[in-house]
Amino acid sequence: MHARLSNWFNRRGWSDLIIGLPYLWLLLLFLLPFLIVLAMSVATRTPTAPPFGYGGENPVVNLNGYARLFTDELYIRAFLTSLTNAAIATILCLLIGYPMALGLTRVSKGWRNILLMLVILPFWTSFLLRVYAWMGMMGKNSWFNQMLTQGWNWLTPEGWAVTSLPLMHSNFAVVLVMVYTYLPFMILPLYASLERLDPALDEAAMDLGTRPFGVFRDVTLPQSIPGIVAGGLLVFIPAAGELVIPTLVGDAASPMIGRVISDEFTSARDWPMASSVAVALLLIMVIPTMLYSHYQAKADGEGKR
Image (cartoon, rainbow, N blue to C red; front, top):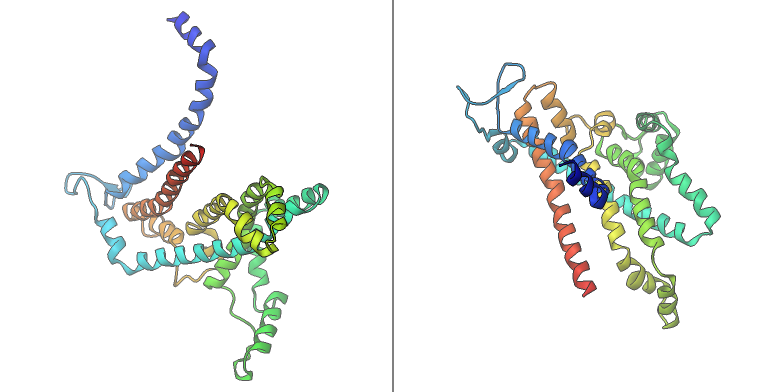
């Protein structure tokens, strides 16, 4: 037995261990917690500790939590608000991040390193500190609010003039802070995708008479779609389940789904309902990602034939 084990380890043991580590990571930190949450989602809320149960006076499988997702206005509105805010933040991050990533690939190596450091510089400070900084900037007496107020008063009729804009506790504030927070997650995958493009293709298109915008539309943009998708997923998925930003700067009357899950677990102590919402959110996030990966792998396979 020892000889066989030693023989396996010498032949392919290291490679099997290295390949197996990611699967072990997924098993312990994703699949196992997901199965626990999934099991709680079909339990029944009880006044015990923990506050859920199976069997006895309660059904073994209770699907009331999933049914409420389609009938209770609170959850429908929370899902719509979360997906809308996340989609707007993702689009804005793409519109801001794409020119920045493209510019990073067109500057000299010395400037590129400096600019890349500036992109990741916000990560050197606390996430909460950055959100609190935005809370101060959006206050009624801040220079940022007063600047936007002057712009509003200049663009609108005199009768619409205001002394300050109500920026805080709104979806505008949530989207603004999410764009600031997640912009590097869009820029870095886009930069990695654009940096690998062959500049000779752009030069060949220009030699054939294509204008600069046509080169971008027909050559650069199609080849950067994998970077766009990767950046979009990195922004959209955490933005849709965001908890801290909507709690601090969002509208309490229109909560996002992360806040709803937190309240169900803590204030309401309805763990089965909170788990049902969490499972539904995970499926909304994971299924499109898996479908994209499937069709991308299929397209890559057909391209290599």
